Image (cartoon, rainbow, N blue to C red):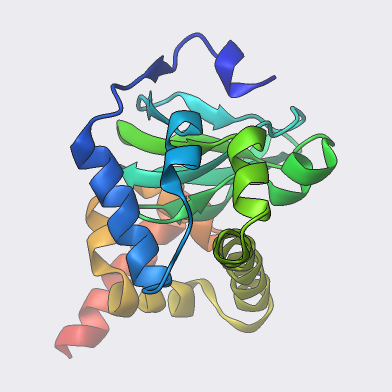
Length: 210
């Protein structure tokens, strides 16, 4: 299912503030970025994905890539009817199944908004414009690398770290994330049950004050 067919997602007005936020993000990645944005701008879309709505569903073909401009989404998959959360995507983080997008094969995970979110949409037309420019290719490569590195880090953490170590890493590197995500999604991300998360949080708090 393409994003255009998800009726619950509404299109935003492409205002100057949203474009400027996107350009600032590009400048942070590639300070000397050069591409004729007049060719790209008409192809870009900004969409609102309301809390509880899906940017992508597992099993559908990923028709667009995204970049979170505002809000928070989560990527997860189902196994035996249980949800396993892989990532949380806050501002200026990429979205989508890159392999599904490029090869037009079913996506292997879902992506759902856990806050009302504004997402920059990169469709195939915009992707092709970026591809013919050296700097555009760099930007797309950075997008793909970011998704690949997130998968690598998650895989290594699952094998190397305990749930407590993963929780402490969030506290140390992304403390604001803990204020934004529901506890049952956090438990899913850590690979434990919600009641186990409550015990883990009490234990960590006791250790911090001991």
